[in-house]
Length: 147
Image (cartoon, rainbow, N blue to C red; front, side):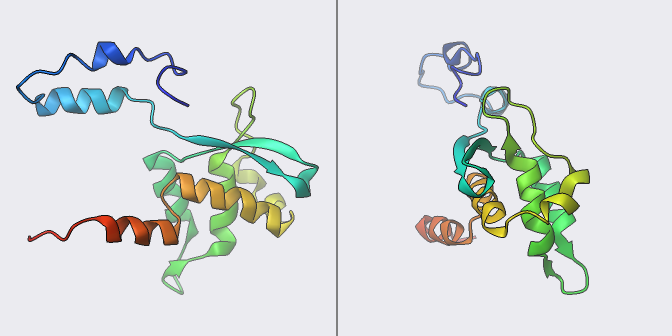
């Protein structure tokens, strides 16, 4: 969803350029006012070609999903827990914006077609910055810093 669709008048939060940079408080206010959740419509053939809106997670949703997906015994992410958590966090009705699933439905989601679950989870992960290949590429594009 872009800022215009979210009803945000970008001109009211982005003043005319001046020679002085904005204060930290002003810059923070601008960032907090931005609609930055991204989404894609995904067709899921395994579920009868149903179209769902897959959105990026907020920081809080991502932290909760990663925490719920962590396996203490193996000290790594449990994909058995991660994929359904991503599907729950990122799946919305494309017309009404309603969440499609709750965490209470994870056992039922785990019984669904794994290819469909992966299809939805991969988009949610990519939109939320959790795609390993994209993350490596992003990190490689940053110049090295002298700390």
